[in-house]
Amino acid sequence: MSRSTAVERAGRRAPTIIDVARRAGVSKSVVSRVMRSEASVSSVSRAAVTAAAEELGYRANAVARSLVQRRTYNVGVMVSDLHNIFFAEVLDGLYAAAADRGYRTLITTGNRDPLAEASALEQLLELRADGVVLAGSRMPDEAIAAAARVIPIAAVGSDLRLSGVDVVVDDDHKGAVLAVEHLIGLGHRDVALIDGGKGAGAAERRAGYRSAMAAAGLGAHVRVEPGDFTESGGYEGARRLLNGLRRPTAIFASNDQSAVGALNAVIEAGLNVPEDVSLMGYDNTALAALRHISLTTIHQPRNQIGEMAMRAVVRRIEKPGLAARRHVLAPKLVVRSTTAPPRPIG
Image (tube, rainbow, N blue to C red; front, side, top):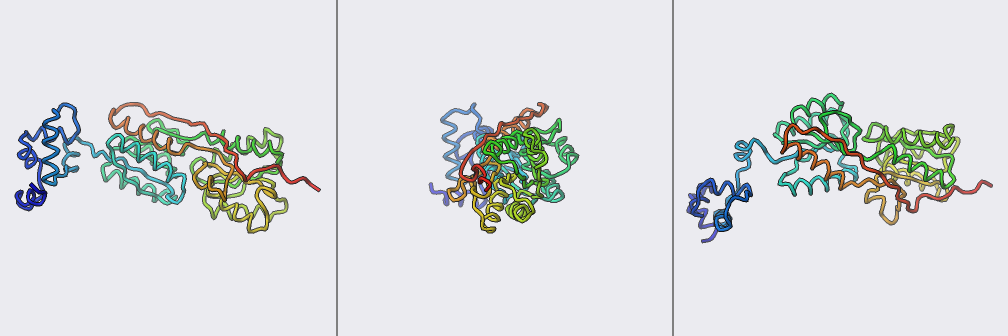
């Protein structure tokens, strides 16, 4: 029987679970168990139900199922900045881990605005998401804590320390120390930082930069130029540094995106990287690995971070009452073509 004929015989209406049960010669409960992928159904009944559903063009009613099971199998993901390639790569891991566990992802953004992020989070709650992952959130801790009392929440790329929130984060302080130690090891003393402002991890990277400079006896050379984890922020920050009274021999940009902006400013000033100015990034995104950029940077396992965050949320969705956990991943130095010893004086 063709699918069109089957639909016509159902009265030109959407087929129901009852239609499938009749067609397959089984009970409605058996169809329900097949749709839920339960193992308690025989292979013969499962095959009959699958064939009947295909012939009738039946699609399980997700709304009805969620009312019965009190679960939507949706996990909301609020991304602070969709323009940041780091979060795009984290999303790959989130999506894959959700699909493996039978969940869908609902993705929204706050465009780096705390109020817009709070509104986006509220929308996810209204859509009855079973859990939420916050990627790089700039919302106040109180707002996140309030939501965490309602549903499981995990935070990515944030140094949040709330008892009800799972956190998956890179050790940003250590990563910044690795970056500065690499530049100092090459012979640089005048190392400047283009800051990440209020971006996720920026405060820890700033503290790591200051700590490494002080440990090397270079506290007097500390320069923190304002930035915001964007290409334009990196470009403007580098322009100010290059036009200052004392030009740094090395620039550590707080993420790869701002490092690319800084690279443009260096080239525009008629200088070469790394001959005149060494340049360091953070994240090791796909952008950093492009051959014509070849950026020395600090590696974060973006896919793994996304996968771990999704697993953390699903773990507490499926076993309510479990305590939230904190996962801190170790960063790694990746040396490419944008760092070298400083040009000899004279």
